Image (cartoon, rainbow, N blue to C red):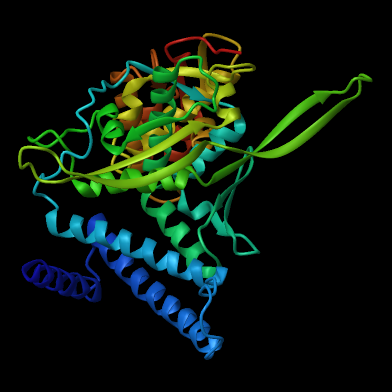
Length: 429
């Protein structure tokens, strides 16, 4: 124990020095510093609340049952306990990163699917693209969460706790893991439908973080598991997704024939539990920490993906395997192409490049335009190579080499289109 504490103190000292010098930190290092700060804040808050409650008791009458702990004091104690659990996970990840220890769940064999169904209804598409851009999110006036405005309406993210600290934490999570969260949602939806089939959407499914990593084609360690920082990142993705609310509009016909429109908030997923469980394998094997959660799809999401009034399109399963940071454009453009295919009435589709970028929530920059265009071309080429979308190609305007020589990049972009066929299947409706 003393050796562990000494190693931990040394590691934290190094991290604080790196942060002071302005050097970038790895996700596990950022999580360790953030969770340690949270423990100290929650501990101080809980001690003050309990101290005030204890002093207010006075001597009181002797005997009888002890008084019940007030709800606000109990809440602060619970937050302290939750913060300590998060710190324990973060400190373990900090000390053991790169060792490959921990199998992180049963050796379930999941194979990345050849194709997945993408929800292309405007609210779902807006929610997924909003998760890629932390700049879209702004704190709510009441301080209960953050919201992002999209073409399909506002998307809301609830925050744990109260005040600016909770909202700031939510913004940091979106900034660090939003793109990954959108990809995790696609994996969850595909995995649920593959496993549950036509079961009611309220049917819960238990999944380990390692299941998702395998399903997304992530490479395991030689021992068959995954690094803790990758597992914790999946847990944070699920935390985000369980709090996303999006507007859903339904048209209902009353008995007298009148038609009315109802608006309400829907969920991407309904999360029952997210927990870390430590097992004790037989035969002297080291204990394993398993991150698992129980969830089911939101009602509207289930309908979009294959139930009544479905609105989805098939896309290549390689969309799950792209890296959420290095291949951000591939994922965003894949979602945008699916959305465009859902609205088109024909099989062979051609749309302006600027229209596609708008659907992906991207804006063509005013500077370094040629470099940005090259990155988009590379992303489109990779989507075509991986058959995420069939017969995908970029078509530049006639005489574009001369325009390039004259540095008229904007004219090239304005005249460029994207051609493709409906992604690996017809729209279901």
